[in-house]
Amino acid sequence: MVDDERVDLGKNCSLELDPGSFSLHDVHLIHGSSPNISGKRRAGVAIRYMPATSHFNRELKETGKDSGYLVNYSERPLWLLRGEDKAGNNLEIGHS
Image (cartoon, rainbow, N blue to C red; front, side):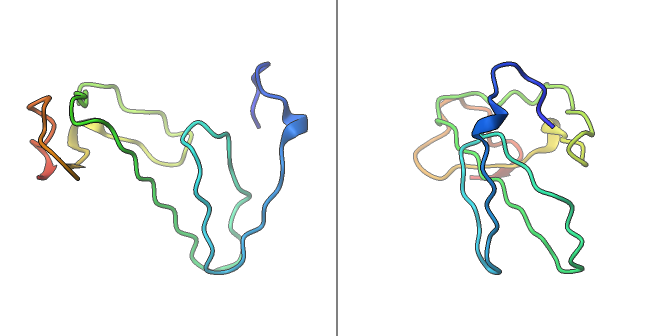
């Protein structure tokens, strides 16, 4: 449940996906789902892009366990999709 005065919960909508379908949305979209009780696998993939001029701060604190997992930024791999790492230090972990 979202407890934020800036969010109008009266404007929410429900969407049930067909098997084999997926949703694609902005990182700032408030979203969620009920627990998967089907016995079938539910998968999720997050892809985030940033300019090659940005520095990815690996010193960030680990996030909380509210999402069900702990994010460790110090070991998060990054992949250069195009151009060059202009920040100069993003590809120490991952693949160029």
